Image 1: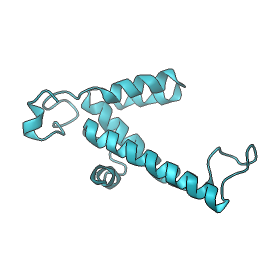
Image 2 (image 1 turned 30 degrees about the vertical axis):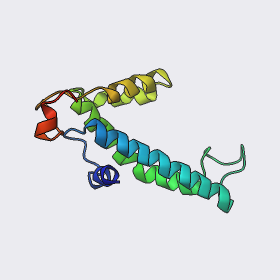
Image 3 (image 1 turned 120 degrees about the vertical axis):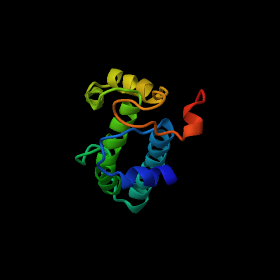
Length: 132
């Protein structure tokens, strides 16, 4: 929960770095919330009938998705910065499947140790020196 709130407090912060823990726990929390909201859409009858709605998600989940879009993009850019890559790599999201897989691999990689051109190492000093 802490990492989820950390990302939300940096709602539109695209500078700096985000460690794997911050990125992946936020992503996991996002997935869980999205599934719960999709279930809520379904149980309340608020979901779109198949092939009728403008999106394949219900309105409750849709509102949530719009609200977390900017922090999701921001934490992804900060995660790329941690691996010493430009936020421009985020454009791979526009390449279906292959681009998503490349970003999955890049976001799973360990960040650069110590400071890089995007800022200080997001890991605590003791962990930054370890093999994590």
